[in-house]
Length: 252
Image 1 (cartoon, helix red, strand yellow):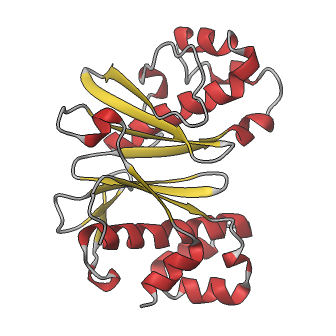
Image 2 (cartoon, one colour):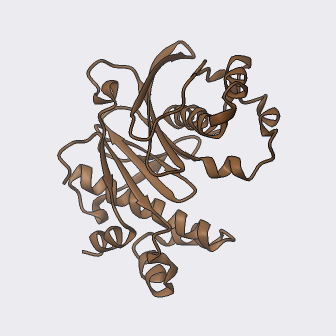
């Protein structure tokens, strides 16, 4: 059991473990049949691996935080599909899949997390910003256009912040992304920095906590601002776990 309930779990879904067909099949047996079927509907093997790691990490993280064995955990889903641990009102969590990593945040109050990668920007043409006018405010677009030397990094930060808020309120992208007004961020997130940003979104104060977890993926958490929360100082315990360790723990 993890002592702190304010944690970010990180698993590299592309660490090679699930490339082996035997490991993949063995890992699939650790999750419910319904979840297995949803994973197998995904067309690409990479997406199947990520979806499987997401499900394994969800069970692993909730077990570690609650002290319950995986078979004792029960999950429900909100209106827009956000998973919730049933019967443990003091544990909230959120999940996100990235280009390479799957992440999970846990704490004792509502929380959202998103992981975003600069590799997405590299796939788009040079003038990609014009396609996001319905996502960013004029002020945000101006900041992005002015950041030519680090535009992809700043775009990735903005995106992870906006989507982490949608995970917090439980809507996902079924909301007005442009109304999540982050405002101007003039400098990119540095390599070893944890950036905390306080904003008022839809009349409620929230705080974002952002950091790089590798050379192309940024993780941002978002929670409603309360002075008693560790996130007010960006203090989440970061826990890296391999796919092999996930499977080993859940197989016990």
